[in-house]
Image (cartoon, rainbow, N blue to C red; front, side, top):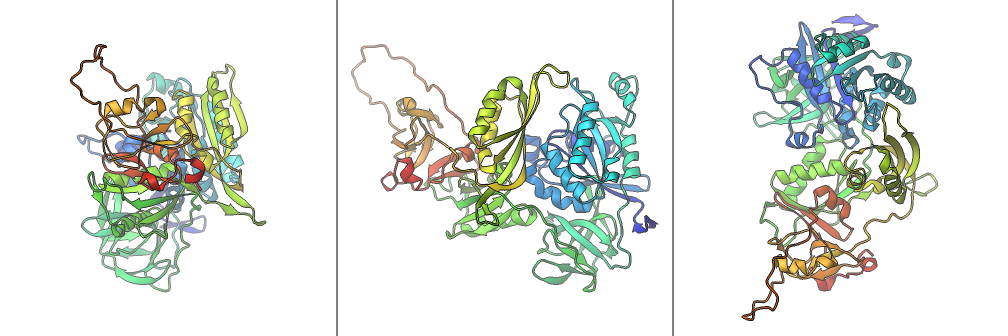
Length: 626
């Protein structure tokens, strides 16, 4: 170790994160960094987007969990953290920033900095991180490199970056092809194939720009836990950056928790080599390491060598803005498609999630079989629900509710978000009307006309209550015919905006148990929209469709055609249902009211009333919602 800028630093280490908006190519860039650094053998088959290891991440094309990897360039080790780009997973970003000393800010050469770019960049700049701007996808036909660079400078000024942070180096890259350059004049030659390129300029820039990790000299072993993992062989794994000192295997160390301190033996020590954890005998300051030996350790804890070494400040994340009730499944079909879990096991599963995700909170309710989870947004809840149903659980969830607050004068406040919409100009009228009915206020309008930088496309910004955004994403995509880009981030609490229209239609509810029959459903088609086709098991109180009027309607979807021995005068003809609206999980979350549940199983997603018997509930909206 040497001293740099009067601070002791680990000169052979660099800790860097890659931050960007969703789908700007950061996971693809990590793939090529690993390949070109020789992490994989020449004969080794490697999947694309290798850092998106979860099934849900691959299916949705987004990074959900922050992950660690490393590359070696001679004696230099570069630890890389791939962070989520969606604001709903901001808790992942906030706790990871303490592990790194610099960031690669990845920006699409056509789209420019988008809201999640802003969200993550704000967190990084506030912690004093130095940036390397990577303009990715420079090979796009609609790339506008100069404008995007100018937009990024404006964003840095807007977020209050200091002079050193604003003097960032710029790298022009095509992550998909695995090349980059610091000379903008070479971009056209690289795209045309007149020059061959690689990612060496980016490696060199990381080593030059990102400071070596500082080491607290004169302090015994000190490590802040920023992430958790689990091994079937050694149990819970604590992941974090070693701030000072060193640790050896089987050394006795002290866990400094939020509630109590106690000592344990470090049974195993690991460090990242490529995508794998490599067991080592010793971990030293500056590196990102993994410690096994304690099953109770949590994110935010500090591990120290003795009682004299102080604990580090705990990781603080922004407060949740939404709450959702999770309940044990009480429907008549419970246990037929998955594991009908007891409240104790259900509670343990939710607590496990909260321990590893600092952006989530857990609360007990007055009901022993119902629990409240607090989080950042619809997507975060949808990911948790999908993970649990894939684990074989059956459970129910209620309508998401906004967490209100009060100002210094005692007035009611609610979370506000900024929605940034990029879409065809032809959809502007419909989208503006949609957002204004949800109490959205238009604050910015860009684009339009026939400029080369975005012919026929506009970018709108709305300030809108969080509750106004619930379920609006699918409607926005419909209004823009799938061509719109939709992004949001929380801007704080503002005055309560008043009542919001939710669902104007009532529900069609099965009045008996059985299986749906096509003949019975056909007779109900004129009453509304069906959610189910024929041959689906139903029970009393289960929702089968949306009524055309505002009141609920109890119906019989199991009605069969009576058979007679008299031939009808007209010829028999084949009749089929006109259409069925298949409801996804996100659509169900948007659709339900406070008196309804979503029943989630590994095979099905059903809608039902909280009170199943029809003689115990009203069909009038004002009565059932009171």
